[in-house]
Each structure stands twice: as C-alpha cells, then as structure tokens.
Length: 106
Length: 134
Length: 126
Image 1: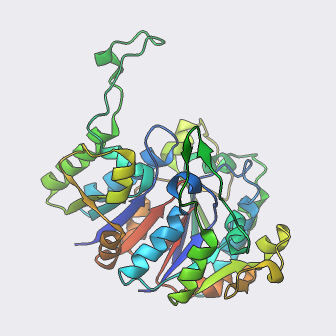
Image 2: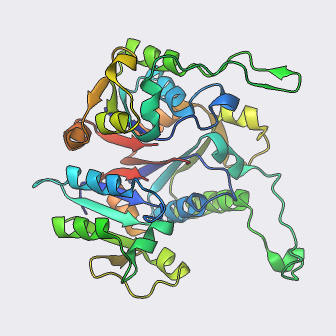
C-alpha cells in the first residue's frame, strides 16, 4: 500500500473542512509518494453511488486510492458504491500500518 | 515480530471511534502483530472494571438477554487473545488522566503510565496511530 | 524519529483540564526526548494569538486557581526548541494578522504541507 494513509471518519457532508482534507491528500501525492484515503464510520456516506461528493472523485482522478470499510458500508446499508471507491476489510489497515505508512486519522 | 502502537482518547459510549479502534486492535492481534495501547484522557475509562451491563426495558430484554457490551470486557478479551496467540500486548492508562477521572479500578492486563511510556512505545513499534477525540 | 503534531481542535475541555491536552502532551513527550514540532490548523490557529485570557471561571463557591494559559504553553514550546507553525489560510479565514500573533510562530501555506510532512517520520493528527 501507499506511503500516506489518511483514515477519514467524518461525514463529508457535515464537515465543511472535508474539502480541505481532500486538498491535503492531493498535496501529499507526488510521483514517488502514494496516498490512500480509507473511509471508516460516517465517512463511508460519501462512497454511495450517486452521492454528491466531488472531493472524492477529484482524489480518485488524481491517483489517490479510495477504500471504504466493508463493515461500515454494510452498517449503513450502502450496497452500491461510487465507481472510484473500493470496499475493503478494516484489517487491511493493519498491513498498511505495519509497513510504515504515515497515517493520519481525521 | 511487528508491533503497532495505538493512542486512544475517547471515553466509551459516546462515538464510533471506540469500536473502530477495538476492531483494528483485534485485527492486529489476530494477524499476530504485537499491540501497545496508550489510553489518554477519556480512554482511561475503557478499562474500568466498575462498568456494569444492564437490562433493556424498551426492548423487553433482561440483563442476560441484553448482554450489553462493557468495554473493560473487550480490553480483557484482547489481553486473553494476545496471550493465546503468543503476541505482545501492553495497555497503559495515562496516570494523571486516571487520577482526575477516578478510573483506578481497571482490568489487570492494563497498567498505569505516562506520556513518556507512549514515547517509548512509539520508538519500539513499526508504526503508531493516534486516534484523536473531537 | 522526528514527530509532527498537527493540532486542529481547540479550547476543548481546556477549562476543566487547565491545559490544552495536546499541547500538554507534546511538552510531556518532548521532555521524554521526543523531537516533536507543532502545526496549528483549523480552530487551533487561534492558539497563536496574543491576549488569550481564561480567568474568571467559577461554579458556585468554587473558583479556578490556574486557568489554561495557552500563550504560555506555546511560548514554552518555542523556547524548548520546538518548531511551531500555523496555517496561513486558516489564520486569514479567521482574521488573524501577524501583528496579533505570538512571536516565533511560522506561518505556512497549505501548499507546503506535503513538503512539511515529508520532513517527519511520524505525523500525528489530533
């Protein structure tokens, strides 16, 4: 997995600074540095197909890997995901952490 | 063997971060990754043995039927799993935070410490995740 | 192992703790040998302002003896050799000008965060 891991836990529609955190992800992304944004808890609300979360789409287009906690998706009845987000088990974070990715929790 | 350090800040029963943190720590131990936890501020309440389950009259469930979660049981379960898997597990409650909250009666697999312990844990781990409160 | 503490929330339980718990924690781990620096962003950029005064908290007959002294904490951090920075855009949004800030605080643009984070082995967001 990538060198920066941003774990996003907050509802992207509730917090106005979500767009700033997307900007941070883009700032961290370079030719030699990968960035993964892992959505957990209410942040997965942005992953539903049809959700108006342009910040996430912009991240995906720029090359940021977007993952969403399978459990949190199921907990919120989100079955169809936006095409740029992939469901992943939470325990995939353990591997990323153990490999030394700089990890920030929002 | 790899070790990860987690810093938790939240008291139980108030937000989703507690259960997410426990799921992550559980995953790490199942993958035989050693775990160190520094419980800061409200998180020192997680290991308090004084937590008691209760019945649920709204749902018509008795004490036994409700089987209400008590995080200190989660902490003990993590300690037991770590022991079964032969994996290091160290849970430190920040001492000053314990004092100001009266959180003195805690699960035996935890211990009292200070931010200096957190720094030591960090130095001895492959990585550290800080899960802040809001 | 260099550490960057990114602090965003502010004035969270500071009266009952008589401290900002993350600034306090930063001083504590620095005292234990951690080379930790601080980036103030979001609400926490207000910690860079001179003239913060939390005196006068009382409840019934109880009065606070040691209100949180955020300016003192920031100043002590800087004096101990910590780099303390604040995000320019968040300062501007809140109408905080350089003249009203504590001395010694670096003002950094959001654009520089990538380079800043690259300088640290650990980046912890609070």
